[in-house]
Amino acid sequence: MAMDIEGYVERDGRAQLVREVREKIDALKIDYIYYQFISVTGRIVGKGVPADHWETMAERGFQLVYGSVANLYVDRYGDYIGYGPESSELVGIPDPETFVQLPWDKRVARVYCTCFRNREEPQNPGGFFTGDCRGNLRRAHDAFREKHAGLHLRHGTEPEMMWLKKGDDGKPAGGFSKPNCYHIDQFESLRPVFMKAIEYSRAMGLDMIQGDHEDAPGQLELNFQFDDALRTCDRLTTYRQVCAQVARENNLVACFMSKPFMGVSASGCHHNVSLWTGGKDELNDLGQDMAGMSQNFMYRKGGENTFMPDTGDPRKPGKVGLKAIGGVMAHLGALTAIGCSTVNSYRRLWDTGFWAPVFADWGYQNRTTGMRVSAPGRFEYRAVDSMVNPYLMANALLQAFDDGIANDLDPGEPEERNIYRAMEEGKLVKKLPMSLGDALERLRNDEVIKAAMPGDMYRVFMHYKNDEWEKFMSTVTEWDMESYWDCLP
Image 1 (cartoon, rainbow, N blue to C red):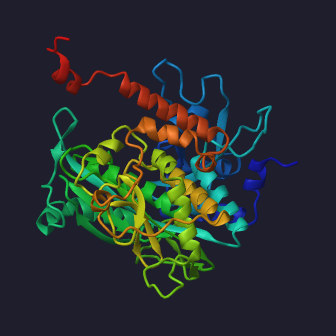
Image 2: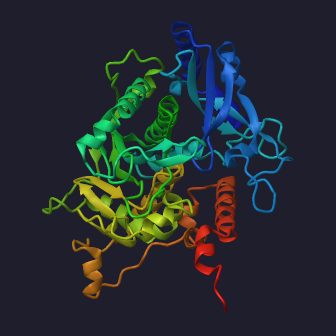
């Protein structure tokens, strides 16, 4: 029986793609390539290799320690998270269709990779590596399509983040601009930054559609066109990579931390989701020379959006959409562990009055609920912030949708009142988990959402996040000292 890795390398059409990448390398005079994959927290990891070795890398891949998917971090007991030094090494195989030049140094390109178990391992040699969140999403999405007659996820994200000044010590020294929401003057103050981010993003295939200054210091939201789930996740990851480079060029900090300041809005990353059948990929070259493979500039267009209303109510989603909402409502607690994945995420939920989703309910244009119908045929999942691993989040939403559709889950009636007013009037509403520890407990007891992290992935995620929670709980903070240092029992 052939190994997964060999089947992947030898799949139909890939040899031609490998040749096309070589043509791009030669035409663009690429000297170096980043071979990238995604860690458990959404961090870009991998290796750099001279472009001379492209064909060898395309066939054999590169090796890297398993622990790289856990950022090679150690837990509070000194043990490596996920995998120890005795573990084998994964094999990263490049996906040639994702090859694209880096616009800030045109000698360099990047390509995303799919990860496999080592070919020499005694158990499942050359098998798909389940610690690879990106590969897991692709396989889960394929399985969802097959189970539901071609139904597939398209989504877009709203990646809020903050541009912070950098102090002499290299640490953040406050936001670059004032916390004035939609204020063009403050937006203008960051024009050199966002115009460069847009320029780089477009060169790498992101169709940038709108942006604004949000209501926190230095906070911008620059959006790009929605698409097939995997491409959207790759583009959000690319956008973060772009922001990091623009920050280096401007001596700023590109901060994706959810809540660096209390008393102003946090950085969310709302996911606008829909389930479709049909459609086809169309090229959108964005007026660029396409310094990379055309797949970077493809967007899924057309087909049927099954979330569109199919009754007399122009706001109410269709039957598939309602069942999908039912699945999310049934699993919102566990989903929160993935969408709000850091200790700091819950500062966002505790800082009341800034539209953060705290309650497990849904509505139409109601920003006090965890999920809203933001437009006909589109749901905005709100319990997610800027630190999210988008691959885990998309996979988890697929699992919730699958449960809702397969088991005909009813989400109940939409809440059109301000949720706080509704509670005053006697409505019983469940809260989302209000700490990372509570959210991890909800995930631990939810088999549906755990299915989004098959094999090693769940174990690595829980090891990493439980350790984060334990480290926080075992740390004496400045607040502790200020509150208790002079107390006499």
